[in-house]
Length: 485
Image (tube, rainbow, N blue to C red; front, side, top):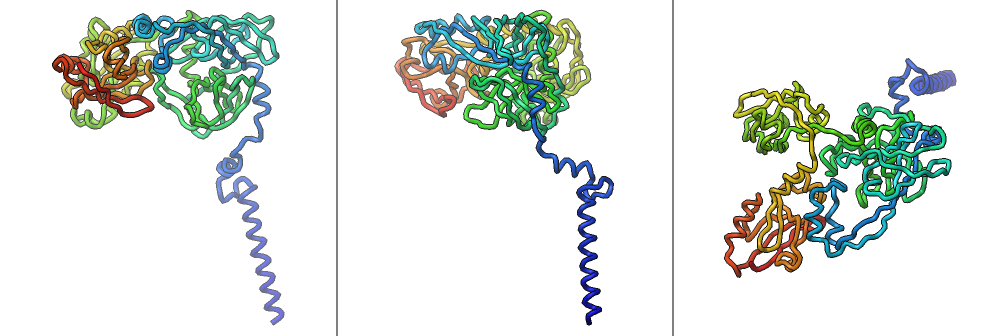
């Protein structure tokens, strides 16, 4: 009996030792792990040991930017809705001044931002909105030295600007990385001056790539949960090697832990163009386009995401000269499949002005190929084309189709209906409470799709009869505006 008990104890002890050895091997000995060694390391090293060396190395290349702007103030509605993507060269300026010129008092506006040095001679990258229309730009370095800066060039479409200071000595620079290789879940670090607190370092992960937030035609943002706040704008987003992989640009109001950065791969070419010529030159086809919805794809008998639909061809522009027509479906450019309108916009924007691109389209289910000579994109002319599509009636309400430029101006994401872009002071429309930015969905229970349809309905309403507009006001919801013609 005693022998049996002793044997049992020996067996139990042996089993314990064997299990302990297996656990040790699985955790610590490469090649014997039950989990592959590389995977085991990934599960253990979830958080870097610290960010001290990275912060120490990169911080001297990050600057604080302070600006002073002379601003002409408008009324409450004007300040809420009017955010020009065209800066000083805004083709809408005279038009909007007509409606809001009654409150044009000047005042000094001070703002804060960040930037990073890319050249020892003093070239600094930041956001366009940080320095746009600035009368004074002052740059403060990590060592406390301050310099006046001048704008080398800006690009409102991507919100990138290049400024320059004249330092007394060579400056520390930060190296540009590669955002294409960035993966969701990868650690990143933001350095900047949130709320004026200079050289603040925050860390987080890449939450998503390719985000579209409605800021312009070239949206392709990196989303991160590294803390980004007012004042961070223009500062670098860095990988763990200390290389810039993004330019911190935007936040969602009230959205803690949600920030957006411009991918550095998108910015590199723009920065170089700004450095060389002070402006960005982009290609232009001369078409209005839209993505194919499920219903449109079924209507044209093609698979969804197989191409993009041409909705308008501007006379005299490259596409019209080449023979492309409305309702053509662009499926390839230079043998590369095109699946979204943003993809086409980027491909053409990156094409050299004067270059010829081969565009394959589907027309009535038949493939056709066109050689199109790319022209220069002129944002001011493009905006004026949009403005010409607008009309005003006796109600004192000026309306327009919802083009990408108009949507960007009023910061809206709607695509159905037409938009009010101006109200004549003292008009029936103003007295009824209509506001710029309102989207007219219906007039007297008739759904509105185009400016021409709206104009026809208003003209056919007898004088003295009611006009009831069913509108959507952003951040509020649906409203009914009542007036008498």
